[in-house]
Length: 481
Image 1 (cartoon, helix red, strand yellow):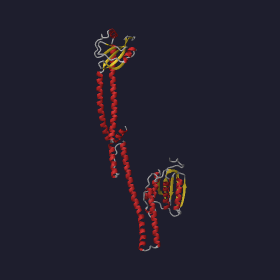
Image 2 (tube, one colour):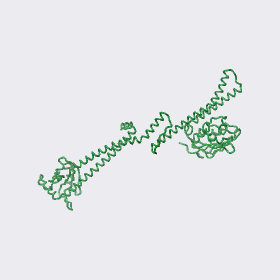
Image 3 (cartoon, helix red, strand yellow):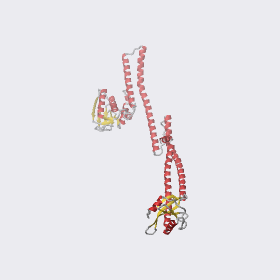
Image 4 (cartoon, one colour):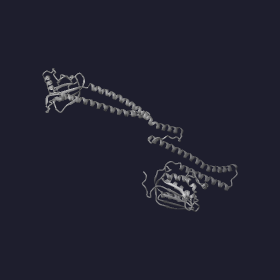
């Protein structure tokens, strides 16, 4: 059985479908043919049984008694009734001795059931069976006790009456029917196999197109190809899913290429500046022409600043390129948002010690990755610290899952607000300030991955207000499994 299954798995899918259809149709046709044959057989036998019952009723008691007497006195003699060349008539005594009617077609072989009826006669019992005549002819036999046909139905003798009919024509009809059913079944199975193969080819044609497209994509890495979607069946859904997948892959590739291009552009500036400063220092050492101490100190400070900016840019790029919903490899946990904001505030105060940072934090719990969430909040606060005036104030408020960070800096022009969360975007007025242009992009990506939203808007009275909303609850929810 396992070998057959292995061979079936080795066949092409359309061949397996055609074979399965043919097997299913063959089983159904065989069941119908066998049922039909048995129904016709029962019907034909029923008609023969009815004829035998009618003949039994037509025999008179005098005919039976005459044959019984003749059989007792002179077993070799035959008297009435008249000739009945198509049927068999005989009496069977309880010891199994047959007494053939004069007009009988021949003698039927006696069975145990015949002698049982003779030994234990019952007026209500009549038995039907298949038997054979002494010349080998198959017959249908009716056996009844010998009784009076009067109202009393009295048993006259310890004998049974056999009436039989030859089954040659009936069996010939059944054999012809079996042959016809066999031929029809064979034609049906062959037709089912051909139809199954045609259906498999037609049904799998979209799968063939999908396979060709997948092979084309794997061979050429061309993600612009699309499969036509027809209807709304499973194949259409598969085609639509494949189109969505290739579109997503194409968008992902485009984003990667854009990220590489943007990163190269942003890295070029600090690297060029560092290279120029280092070349000046190297040339001074090679030529022996010393750089004035103040200029040398400025060059070293510039190199250090460019290295710091380059390290920050590389760190932001690594963070932005991380995979996973939370922007980190860590699992989601129940996080106290107000405690996370409080920790981020401590770090922000270290970066802007001259600023006044006031906060109002109400309890709020969310499901997030702690490190990624704190990094996003720190970036949001750093943005406010960077653009706040010296000795200015930063106001932080957390109420029912909404975190607002308001600074009193120069603000962001209205026409630049749609671009603040784009990667590497920096306001023309802020290009002289340190930064990579990735901080707010990391904030947006992290917050949206947790089902939240973040936005920047102009604050009343000047400055900018950043708003971050995260779904959660004021009380700790159950821990994730």
